[in-house]
Length: 101
Image: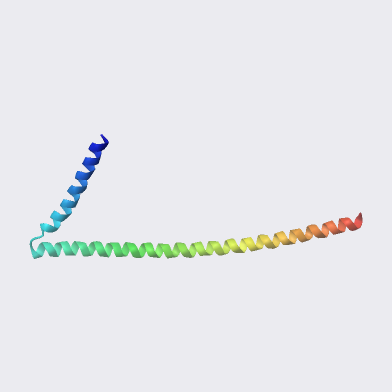
C-alpha cells in the first residue's frame, strides 16, 4: 500500500507538471498571450502589495519588540535599584541591632 501511494503521488506530480506546460503550450494567439500576461501582472501586483503589507507589519512588530525590550531593561534596572536599597536598609538595621546589643 505504501508503494501504491508513492506511485499515485508520483503520477499526480507528473500530471501537475504536464498541465502547467500544456497551459503555456496552448497559448496560440496574441490575444491569449495578452490575457495571460494581464493575469500574471495582476498576480505580481497582488503579491507585491501583500509583500509590502507583510514588510510593514514586520517593521511594526520589530518596533513593538524594541519598545518592550526597552521597558524590560528599565524595569530590571528599577528592580536592581530597589534591591540595592533594600540590602542597604538591611545593613543599617543590622548595624543598629548590633549597636543595641
